[in-house]
Length: 65
Image 1 (cartoon, rainbow, N blue to C red):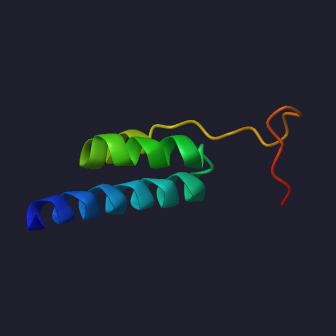
Image 2 (cartoon, rainbow, N blue to C red; image 1 turned 180 degrees about the horizontal axis):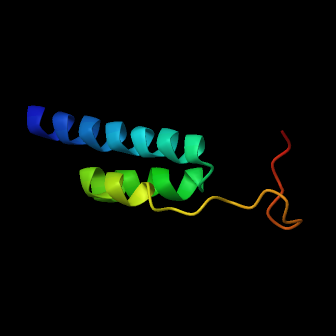
């Protein structure tokens, strides 16, 4: 039972970590949060190669700042 709890906490930790890193770098937050939950620590180096979202594009500018 404790192993399952630890596993879930690790998944949540890496999901939140990659979402935070992606937001700071201007990448897709939802995608990288999902990848953090699925791939865990293996996705951390990959997020640093992610391209930033072009906020000037009219179809991608759905979030108002």
